[in-house]
Length: 296
View (cartoon, rainbow, N blue to C red):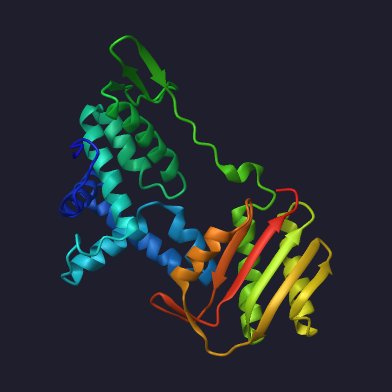
């Protein structure tokens, strides 16, 4: 049986996404999408694919949504996982904003398009949605500049305050995502320029500091230039395993390869599939790299 509060039919997705578009402010979303596109255009391929595309939960989905509409294609017949997630978030916000004071609505209109903090504020929405689906009444505090919890949950038996704190897992990581992405951007395009494709696996003895990225990338590149393209070797920060070969114009589906990588990625490891030659979902002669620490 359908739960009318939480379930969404495919036919409702377009309507819900349009409602979110209107709630956030069409001009605000359009401006944010233009800024997002400029960032993609100016960034390198790795930063573009693995940083900006995942920095905000909605921009890539909104872009797909508007492209489908522009080309006269049915939204319900072309729902990607990103579009489904966008419609689900739109459902939550459309429902919950009815119980918010105007000052809180305006706050979320600003905060949810903040590319640096959107996930934090969406976390608040998700927590509120959980309590709402339990049949509880929600009462938000006015956004008056004072420090206070986000909202009050009123149950049949008692009331309690809820203050949301989202903690990034990157804080305790030996290899921070931003440093990994910098390292990939420093190393993989140069390996590709040398005419190689294949696999690069690196296991560090400890932490990767930001000031070690350039020297580690140079060390790996010199190793490859010397002809060490297969097998294991010791490097200054740990061990490297190479399985490279000359480019053969091999075409692969990057979505499928990336999914396989994610499924088999060791706990705490960072992974990427890179190629500068991309046509839709297909890339030519990709390089796959896994970087991890023994102490992760």
